[in-house]
Length: 250
Image 1 (cartoon, rainbow, N blue to C red):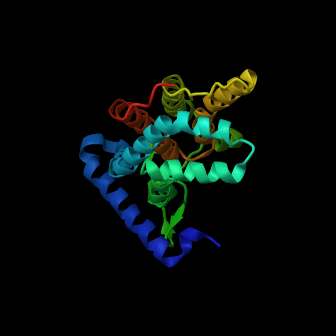
Image 2 (tube, one colour; image 1 turned 30 degrees about the vertical axis):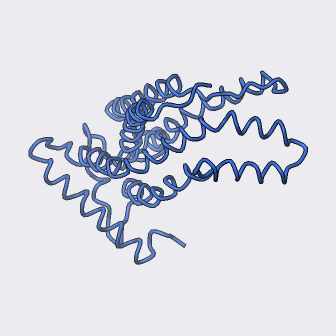
């Protein structure tokens, strides 16, 4: 069953589509033939701006976790042989600190439906029973419905296609590298911890930053533009919020 064909979801998706195409019409006098691509970027920015409260909640939760990390490590050390006592003491610590171990999850769950609706605009060829005209619009003569892997496999990849996707992928990769360097995970260093295991986790976290670039190879250009805009916004937002809500010293 296609979830996006469910009438309430289809109605929301169609309303978002109307907004997107309305933005394209407004931008056309300024951006010309690139109006549809510009509307993708603008809509993405508007959605990310609306989700700033969720980002703030996540930043606060991350700050709380870093502040409680030493106490949680001490509890694990003291009660490692008594899991039930460890769970009780952990929940008591969170209650005493007026915090929740799930605080960072709720904002992510809250924004997931919004992100899913917006992302669907750039993937589906039909929306609420009618054609998705967005995907027929072009950016530098490349239709927004073109995927790089699909074009290469079909032998229809032009220099324009390669150039546009190269630019989008470059943005995603540069942002991923900056994110990897700026937000290296803090690895707990305990006497019984395996150094190689900690290093492996850090390397894996670094590699995962680049998975968006892999996805961008397979999705339509409109979705790739959405991904590039999203990761760029997320990086800037995290840098700003990290300064406002700094983590406790490791």
